[in-house]
Image (cartoon, rainbow, N blue to C red; front, side, top):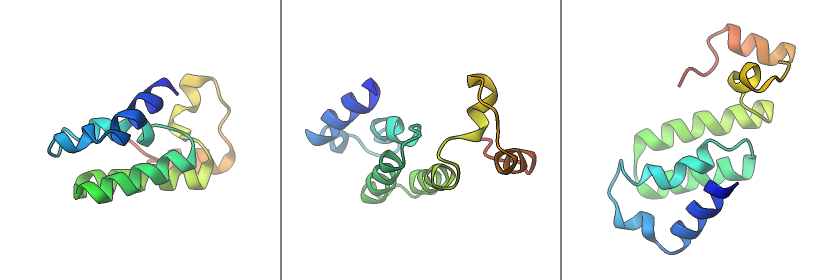
Length: 98
């Protein structure tokens, strides 16, 4: 939450626009790594506005995982969360390795 707050304030002040891609991505990472769908949508929009096609690609992948599962299944083991059958199938099929 703190990283998202700091990044949000920096973006609101236009600090991200002082950097070219790919450095600009670092302002958006707190949203990309969030398990909140609204943060994921924000990351996609910010990435699209930046014109960074690689960032857009990964923002969409992250967003779709959160949309589908409400969390990142690849974090379950390390966080002590039990994977649902659907999450386990996703992981067994390769899941998200990035």
